[in-house]
Image (cartoon, rainbow over all chains, first blue to last red; front, top):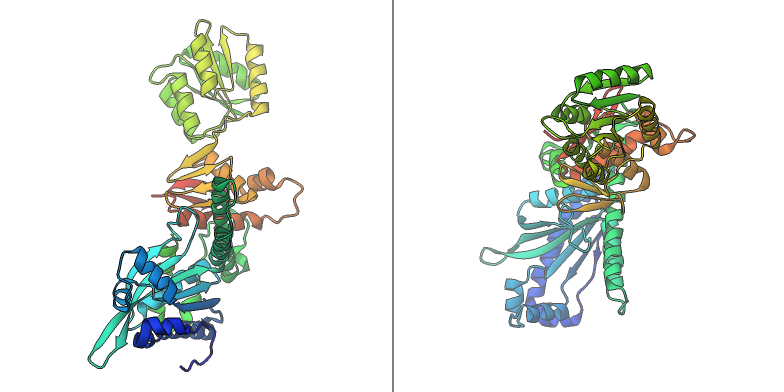
Length: 255
Length: 224
């Protein structure tokens, strides 16, 4: 597969996966590649048009045979390839990690505007964090896969989050899998507190970026009745992109 | 110093007003509980003197509603000698002091001085407005679905705004109360923190917003 510039990490599946997915593996790889290339395109275009990349890094994986089998068993489904492809929507997973909070929704808008991609489900764990403090935007998208006769759709899960959310999730994940620690309740409450603190900083950094973007005159002493400065950054985009990127979407989404 | 005097006996009220004004207080005199509540909710007083027995609303009801609305102005209750229960209820509801009738004018003046000097504010642990709460014990700002842990300065700013809903607070007041007179910080820091708080209120769908009035300051208002 040719990429104009590879920024995204791609992990190749191991032989056990090839055994499980058989000749369907290429479909999953195709789906992953379509998603990665669409994100790549957003990054290139944003950098060219606005001089900044809304994506810090991107990871993808084909669900390992082992964890796919576990998931099927847990759900009481037969451990077969057909059952996996029909029922499990995260056989293909892509994680997009963004610098700023509004970039998360920019990526979401971009992906849902990509020709062919269909947004099936959106779970906003940023507006509605999980009880443990986890924050992220989860999308299920349907990606068309060309077949000899017509095409079929294949589902994929995309997790979009900020560096701060990713940082918390990564460390929380590590801690969770450590051996038993005493004082369970305190630890859970403290992890949530860390998440609430991290996301407070996350919002502050976005506010700072907007102040800086709006220019230094916005840093005026109070009393100035200027409302939160609007970002004017997407004005240079060609019209079709502009539509997708309207700041309105971001604002609504962040709220 | 600005005082609100709620006393339904017109003659007593007039006498008290005269003495207080003579002692360099500005006095708004009201004659029933409803007016007392309305004035206290809309104006910024340094102290409130509340008679307990008043038409429309009793002094105790006014007191309770003010404290529920996060109005922390010092309050002195005026009670009759026999109203022991009222005095206890009053103090427990958040009154700062009481005086039994009849009283010596010099004692009233001394108690007002003491009360406004202390500004021993009745401070509930959790402030609430719109759809948000601010927990003073753990600095947590919570909406219905998510919460943020605020930093020190941010917390103090929102605490000032939520303790004085609808009232304008100037940049200078924020600087003095939070950063202190000797701060190295520039006044623009207030605007930066206002921006932080606005973003969080929006993200929480708070139902309240920080409004800016040019040349005057900021106030926390219910969204329309």
